[in-house]
Structures are given as structure tokens and as C-alpha cells.
Image (cartoon, rainbow, N blue to C red; front, top):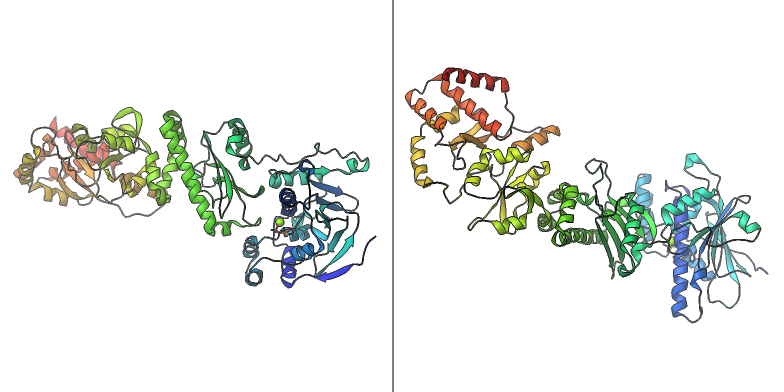
Length: 639
Ligand code: ADP
Ligand code: MG
């Protein structure tokens, strides 16, 4: 028996939405299946939940609950069927015929005013087209549904071509649940419309978008249907292993590792696993991994972030940059947020306040896990730092909210121990009485830094200096104000004031030196004005004749070089030439200058001193040929 057919109009907003959907605002049409499977999965969840709370439904054998996909090649239909909660006629009219979501009218207005398809897509993304996405691939949709807990087997048949209206009709003999039958449009590669009758295409879409749906998704083939031998189990398309949704205590490390390999395509086990669940107003689960080896393309511009976004087990997107900052791009994993639209766009995610909150929390979790590794297992941490330290240090520039936490993680070479790196915390613990700053020197490699003239006084007086040789060190060490209240100070910059004199009482000497050199210094400043901004006496040298120092906020020569290599135009930064007054060459120069201010050799010697200081710190001479000629001429004179 079937009753009369009622024809009903879609609500005005629904009509507009349908028009948008049909006129293909979405470039990716495959997602219709994700939407329908997601609805089916929700319906199964609801049935299970109601069976636990509402006696009207009675007992439900959850092992029977499933989603099946049925292809009829002759009829050109694809049916998505579930034995979930189902809908009553009124549910159907209300849920499918109208858009109950608030703000619909305003959104439609914005979409109409949007200038291009991308904007429209992103706007609709925050809203979600859900069920209506079926009309992207079908020119007619027929739905049969019967609400669980009804006394009779009467349900409702709904049908629409997605234009202005739909029909509803009571139908007897329906099973509990919902089936959605799509009368497929012909495949059209130009319109990105795949052949959705193809079993392999369907398998691929399910694997990509719905693999972790926790109800079985089964393929019912025509063959199996024909001989009545549908063998459930054999055709399950999805793995259902939403590991992240299981309590931590129930998951073994082996399972975590397997899962990590599946999502990362890495063949090594991860170095660290972070599994968490957030409850409250914005619920989500996160399962994150720190790989044990850096990928080869970690520093290429195209490297994507490794976190996937799911909404209630449904895959939404890869490389979700809204969930992980750039400097944690090596972190892999899954975030499953419960209260987002399936069609949420990247743009909207970036602006979402709650997503930003999730990101903050995840960053803290990841940094906390690395910190814990540092405390519990120094060896593993050191390995991790070798792999990812350079990227983590980018965080010191990008993420000022976590400066302190990141500084805790920094591991650096130091003059303290030639074979071992140190943390800043360990450095601070070793600081001398009265030492305020954390001293560091940047350079191209350990040997250059260690042998740099800047190091002399620090070595003589036993001050530990960090040896920073990563290009990024130049930048963060300069920008980070302090660690644990101790400012970071480059020993190649500013004046050095190490209280404790190295040998004898230098400060009395210093005053005398200033007097002795009162005439030479201004003369040299003028003679070398092309290269330096000032010449002064040094308190950082013990053996070298001279060195170059920058002002506290000057760019280091290395950094200048880096920026130039990247094609940036920079004004040359002139530094200060510091002279060691106790050095025989410097005192001889003074004597010669006193004897004859006009001797042309003086300026040439000054230039050689400047060039040597540049070479000693590993720098490059502006005119190597000229330097060599001056030097060999001078040497020839001495023989
Ligand atoms: P959303 O899933 O975001 O609510 P949809 O357009 O996908 O939006 O679906 C609208 C509503 O229709 C759902 O919230 C649900 O109540 C109902 N619905 C859709 N598909 C089914 C189904 N297979 N079983 C039961 N209810 C369904
Ligand atoms: Mg939906």
C-alpha cells in the first residue's frame, strides 16, 4: 500500500543553497560521499545512544549497525544505506526541507555578494552543505527512511530533483534507518565529475575521507545481491581504527607506531607520541607524533604541516596550518574536532577563535613532551634536538608566547665542554658569581668561533661562552631578551666589562693607556673611516692586536651576509676597531705615529691591522689583492 504523494516547496534559503550547490561551487565533488557517510554514521551513533536511554527503542544489537553502499550500474544509481535512527515524516520536512541553522539568510546574502567562486566556497564552508551536496553529482535523489521505535513498518519516501520542490509519501514495508539513492549525472571529466558507479573510485573516496568512521562501511556488489549471498565483513572498506578516540590506557605503543606509519608514510617509529582529549565547550581529540628523523625537505619552502583535521572521524583536510605553527611543521598527527562543519575552509579555520585555542594548547603539549624527554631521557632528547633543533629555534622568532619554553629546550655548543652541548639552564647554573649575562658568539663553525679574538678575554678570565653556528642563531640570540632573567649578550658587540682582571691590575694600566693613545686613536679613526666608525682601546684582547666589534643592536656580519645572499639590499654596517694597547705592533704603531704623523706607511699598516682583524673572526676582506700587496710590502721592509 502506498498513500498519496505530497509536493512541498523548499524553504527559500534552501532553494538558494541548492542552486549554489548544483552550480558547482565545490571543485571537489567527491566530498558528497563523505557527507552522506557522515550523516549515516551520526544516525548510527544516535540510535545507539537512544537505545541506551530511551526504552521506546528497545535493545539494539550494535554489531548489526552498518553503512552500506550499493551500486546499480543499469539504473545508474548509488545508494548509501544505514540502519540508524531514521527520520519521521516531520523530521524529514524539517531537517531536509529547511535549513534550521541560524544566520542562514545573512550568509546567503554574503555569498550572493561575493565576487568569486573561491570566496563563495569559503563562505559556504563555514556553513556546510551536508545532505545537499548529493545534488552535485545526482540530478535526482530518492530517500527512504523509517524512524526507529515506531510501531508499524510505515516510513517515508522523499524525492527531489533539487530544483524548487520535493515530494513526500508514506510507504509501508521499510526497514528502520535511511537509504539515500543518487540518480547519478553522467561522468564528466571536464566538470570534475568522476564515475561514481566505479567500485574502485568509491573505495578510494571512502579510504581517503571516511577510513576512521567507526561503523563498518560495506560495499554491496551486484553479484552478491543477485545470489543473495551478501557476506558482511568481507567488503568492509574502512579500517575503523580511530585510534585517537580510544582511551590512552587502552592503546599500546605498537598500535600508536603502526598508526603513525600509516599517516606519515615514515618507516621508523616516532620519537614521541602525544595523545590528548579536551572536553568542555569545544571537544576534540588529538593524537600527535614527533618523528625520530627529520624529513629531507624540512627546510624547503613547500614543506607542509603534518597535522590532519577530522570532524567526528571524518577526514577534512591534510596539512592543517591552523593547528600547528610553522616551526612545528615536523609534527604529524590527527586532530578530531567535534563541533565544526565538515566543509570548514582553511581561511575560516585560521580565524576561528576556538581553533586558535586548540593550537595554543597543542603547541604547549608538544613543547612539554620535548621538555619531558629532555628531563627523563637526555640521550633521546639530544637526538631529537639534532634532528629538529634548527626548526624549533625558528619558534624563538615566530612564537613569542612560548619564548621561555623554547629557550628551555635550546641546546648549544659551549666553551665549557668541547664534546657536549649545554642547555641554557645548565649554563646559568655554572655562571660565575656576579655574572649577569649569558655570553655567546656566533660564527660559521666551532673552530672559527673558538679562535676568534673576541674570545680571548673570556677564555683568560674563565667565562663560559656559547658557540652558536646555526644561521638562525644569529637572529634569535639577538632578538630574545633574556633567559631566566639573564640577558643574552654577544661578545662581539658593545664594550666588554669583565670585572675581574686577568693578570695584574689592568684598570690602572687602562687609564695610562688611554693617555698614551690619545693622539693615535682619532688619527686612526680618520684613516680607516671608510671601514670602521671608530677606533678605540680594547679590554677583550689578550694576545691579538685588534678585533672588530659591533654596537649592541648592530647586525652581525654573518647576518648581513645571509640577508645579502637572500637578495636584500642593506646599508653596510660599520663596526668599531678595538686595539690591544699591550700588543707590540700596536705600541710600535703609536711610537711611529708620534715620530712622524705624515709617514704614508702608517695608513697602510692601519689597513693591514683592520684586514687581519677581519680575517681572524672568519670574515671576508673587501679587497684581498690589495691586502696581500700591503702585507707583502710591509714584510719585505722588515727583511
Ligand atoms: P548536518 O549533518 O550538518 O546536520 P546535513 O545537511 O548533512 O547537515 O543533514 C541535515 C540533517 O538531516 C541531519 O542533521 C540529520 O538530522 C538529518 N539526516 C541526514 N541524513 C540522515 C540519515 N542518514 N539518518 C538520519 N538523519 C539524517
Ligand atoms: Mg551532515
